[in-house]
Image (cartoon, rainbow, N blue to C red; front, side, top):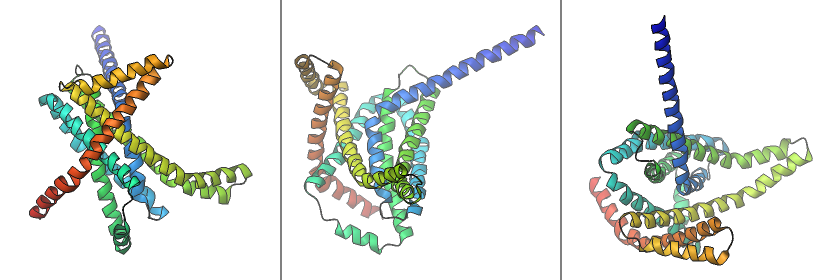
Length: 321
């Protein structure tokens, strides 16, 4: 009997350790996920455009298809790659982060450039109009999953870099997987709500029994176009800011301290001049200067990508066909 009690005590102790380990994995995942907030905001801002032009009945199925592709990207491809990096090439994490940061600055700067110099997209619209709905939907989903892969790679690398090095292999794997799922469901859940908000507003206007319900419905319908534009602006700013921050921090990790030291010095001078809310002032000034760095790098990358990288990639793509 005493042996059975001892065995039960051991089982209980193991269960407590396992529960603590699960709690630790979830805690690390949530904490690390917050570090990728900028890229996550951009992911949420980018996705709604892929359902534009489709019938209301197809909006949620398209979002779900993209979400499934995102889960596959993160769990099947990116988590194993991240674990291999952490185990065998931790030195490569900072350069890869900087590469992803450069991509974010390029994407953000390109959006700014198009806003300042709007291009003529009529040819693309005509092509889309001529395509069958099913073909267009498949093409849009594939494009969204490719974009998600790049953003997810950046998100997972940021999460990996935010995890403490002393946690074990399986805790790292668990934290990456949990963080990936949390972010995916948060992003695509939010996207699903956003793309159906106007339908909800119309339903409230048509079926609302009370005047306040109908008024709220009208406000939702009228406010959604402006909200979507605001979301794009926030997403673009987040891309540029996060990309610049990643590059500045990566340069610091690689031994080039001047940019980060300069930004810190300016931020501390701003704190001394403000004399109040030092944490908020320091964060605002640092984020602004990181954003300036990101915008400059992104603008420099536009001609490089347009006239060098894209043509070379096109040559290799045609050669492989």
